[in-house]
Image (cartoon, rainbow, N blue to C red; front, side):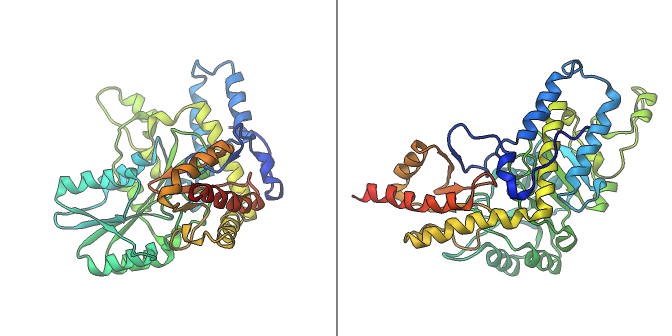
Length: 393
């Protein structure tokens, strides 16, 4: 699969994005902003005379493998560990179906976790007689302390299924501390990095998870309908996928065997590949996103993103709105706890200003990418104070 364009350097990163038609786009926790390179890649696909006629099947596998190699760069660099699947829910369902879990054991999640990381475990617990338990923050507390407390006080925790940041308010989970504590308790670790892959550091060697899932959109800057599953080495040999499609099998052996026989799995985590990922448009857009994210990561993407949230946090405190910030350390986005009686008016006022941000469970998620300079985030604070004052007057 040909490279769509030369990635933009960090110094001129804002130029990599399409201009948002509505004004300030601060909603990357819902969907990453559109890359110019992704639009170019989609245009190239649409211009291909073979598109819509499926083209030459011999080109499918090289395209998939090229994307797998790029995606591995966001994990540990080992392409054999990465599977291409349609959603994070699909990936997490694979983890839930494969990990050993017995009656009376528990699966630990974050309180208020996103449903894609709850529902697969809920079903597995119902199937075997296990239970879900949720780490809950104390007022003003942080997730890391809550998880460590739950590990110490909840018997028979078998699996920790965690995010690196909470999807509602962007507060961090310190996986460098959680992972060794989980191993000391004999618990396995599963990670959903949908809100951090492509934005924050990933250290699989330290964390030693069994499975890692992530969407391909949001911070990986790819399209809907294509997600990633990383599997630890033992599961690449013995794991069972959710679907038994032909794309995950040795093609030569499969077609030679005919309807009576099977065929070996492809090597590594490819056994978990889903048939539906073989779509030229999605593969091309995902490639453009990963090429750009990987280029920025080498230059300091995490620092640049977190600096924007730091600028917003400092400006809010200067405006006397520090109480709106969530407890714990925010990462690359921040969910503001607006005053209940002013929340509707503030959200409506920002919408009228052309600011795109998501209201989720009592929090206004401010999630910028590199297309928004830090000074623009800082300037948001006095506007928020003014909108709140209008309600109070």
